[in-house]
Image: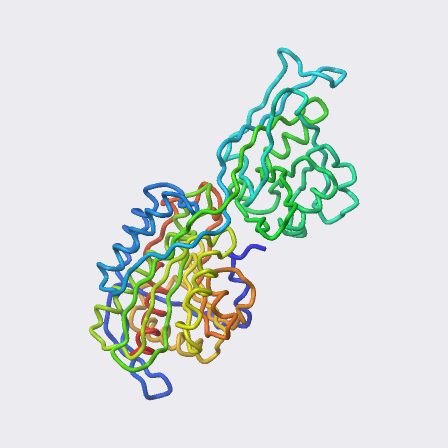
Length: 467
């Protein structure tokens, strides 16, 4: 389930050329009555936020880097003029890759012991293989712990796992391969000692790099599989398959699983009226453990900071509270947003609107973004704002945007815990990040200019709704 390549969700959406550049004030009409002010959004300052958040390395949920990222966001929320800024923490199941060595070792003709001067191929963590969420460990003691590898196809034929007992099963992952949680238990139940997913279909232009994906939360199971589970590049998988007649896989893997504290950063533009209704901007600030995640999803919290600044600087009085929240724990299972929603369910109220930013950015090759919502009326309002921007700033005609209806019932991102209770939601997405969930999602792919597109449209929409 490739939740970030979301353009496929824009079913029946209207696609138009959208252009945005520097700040302007303006107005459009909703239903011939309501004038809408277009907020400012400094995309160059947003790029600074992205760079600062990425500077400490990957923000794996529960890590010191994630905590430092949350503190930076909180400081910027305060600087933007938000009130009641604070960080909440929630203890959730998490994992940590503490040690890993994986290699192929050549064996003698009888296959009983390694060749004393035989060939050994050592693989590189992050660039050639990446663990999947909540992988098990493997304690290598001596050559008797080396393992044969067997291919089980693409993982759709459960009978193919019959040859995996006591071995490492290699799954050639393609579009038909079942999700991680399914293949993990299929292989474990068949007696496999480890699972390798070979990437054979995502990111051809990058050489089919290994990608991080999460797996089933182990807390729900008394007998959770304690076997290694990792994705490899196509090249590494091909090497393993080619060499297994003469080589065995050697693994020494230590992955810790337990509870860690993740952060949720919250700040408000408070209502000056009597309404208890809340409009909430959301984004996750964590990244996968194997990447600094410049696009996924550092652009999210960076966008929220500049949207907050633009709304505060409008000088308008707010009849509804506008809340900004960034979450840890998204990449492993939406933990931050789930826990926050559960803790604040009564406060958020029945009329909550959630505007979620996940990879709301496009590179210079794709040049397109999309917004989907479970409310057609909201989509109409967003399109009117986009139309007005097009008329005012035609110089950026190369950008396109899609608007489409979606019920948002699939948990692709942090909107999901909130819309389950019936809230209106909008998911702002981008496109073109083929580097997503790999070590190559770095600053070289940032197109900060594109961050203002959905930032200004949704910020202006929220301003109109809240004033």
